[in-house]
Length: 238
Image 1 (cartoon, helix red, strand yellow):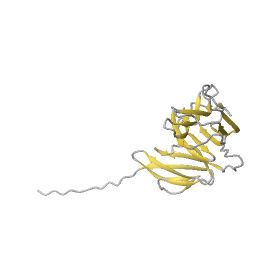
Image 2 (cartoon, rainbow, N blue to C red):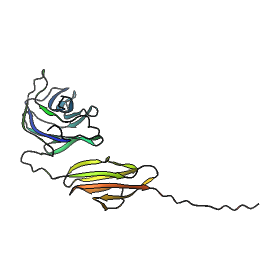
Image 3 (cartoon, one colour):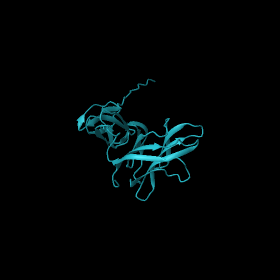
């Protein structure tokens, strides 16, 4: 799967024992072809005993994100991770048993291209053993075994004029039915004139929301602001 901008990795994992307080079990790691980490996923227990899932994303900088979850030993869990490679709109997303639990969006992930997936217990001095099954790597969302994956649509955001948008211009993939809000951010002296959705004028509401039922190209058309100049005549008498 190396060479693709969007990579989904889905696997089932089971551990034979819970980690001790303050310890983690690494269950998967995505790397470049040069073995440089892109993301890592852990079952973790804090020093206070809280169980949680940890996503360590390494691009463009290292960031740990956590989802508190009381997982159990000897239970199968379905985990799926999306990594999208882009200079401004890169993203990471994590699903647990079909539900999205973690995300990191709007980052520069362009420097690290997916090369391989490492799975298994990677702690040489740790007693917990991991078991994996049903590993799939794809360019689209996979979902749980037996689940019909939702239809995916693409939203391409562009700007005409001087300014930006939030999310930043780029192409994003969403499941069917997702409601996406896009805000126009005109530069000083500019204003939002209208939105074009697949070339058609859909008004100037800001933000603009679109329900994903097809592939859409959304353009924020920005125009120079026009100011009304009021002229005053002052009469002086002496």
